[in-house]
Length: 485
Image (cartoon, rainbow, N blue to C red; front, side, top):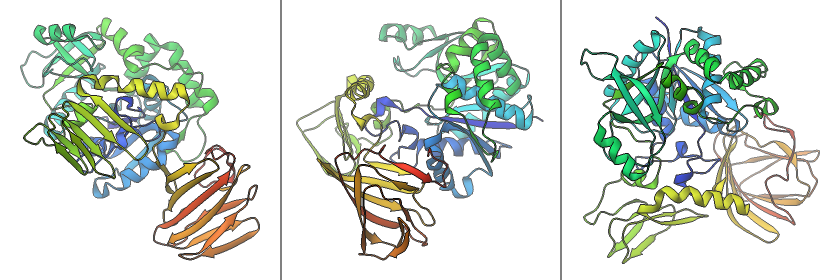
């Protein structure tokens, strides 16, 4: 029997969930009210399917170590085999699926079945999900391209839809299977209501199932130029660890930026090549703050939230409080998202427009669209505590056994104070240790490295001084994590 290989596509920025979701900390890594991330839930759901032992993840190169750490947190639930296709930057889902198909084909052959799953969906009913996957794999084994449709529970304008045609399997066994007639873009409210009333429209879940050979053949039929560009990238994969396939940035820049829906599934549906398995499981793409709010319990006035909050004469309001008290007085129907470096206040009827904030921040050159105040790195994380003209204050935490790159800065000096653990410091030709409460100074244009050789986290406070304090003022000479030199 052909193996089933789940492919997690993890790369969307989740702009409607700003400021908690950002380009370098996307929504798949957001902690939900139960403390677990969407990516962890997706991985667990995939690995719970019968016979699955391997997980292939397509993600951004900068998120590789964060993803590995998250999978390690799963403990006994983690994948026995984890492999990665690492993109230098996003090119939408069609290139991601094509690269994954080539990797699966090379390892298992064209008959291997791929289950393509977005990293940021939430499904609670594992049994119903597994039943839908079983139906999909049977169809995929027969050469069909399979997608999963969700029966609408409301006239939703934030999702795409699928129009179902004739039933493929007339046995009446759930879940039902239909021929896909067409994919439909996100509709306005009146159109969404008409779809729900018609009864043969389902939400497009963005999950797919097919053999590696079937999707590659469909790409050849419907998106040959894209397939050629991706094939060149696959042929030029960097040699090394087969579990970490890193795409060349210059070659990847020539790959079209297009979704798998547009590139393949829409024309394939018109050609009668797509089946829709109508899942009976619960499903949400957690694509807006309204969806996040619904994951929390409501009080008697319809208020929901996370963190320390006070509600006075407040109704139907969601508050996310990161690290301080958020109080609301005399308001209703709001979403308030408070983070250390950005605050969102929006009417709940306008939450689909949050992405416009991200667009505006990009236009202004404000990095708040890209990174949060606490930034994850392969070696640990740093938090910007304060910055102003000529200075920046950071808290840096280095994992046991980890180290920053050997580097220098042209425009800033750095003062380090150790507050926990023991630091091994390289400064020019010197290598020395600093204990708790000790400090050192790194002048401008001086090669340096910070390392934690201990078994507990190393925490330092760093004071940067200079005319320019951007993260791009760094020249790397050695880096154990393979980052750009």
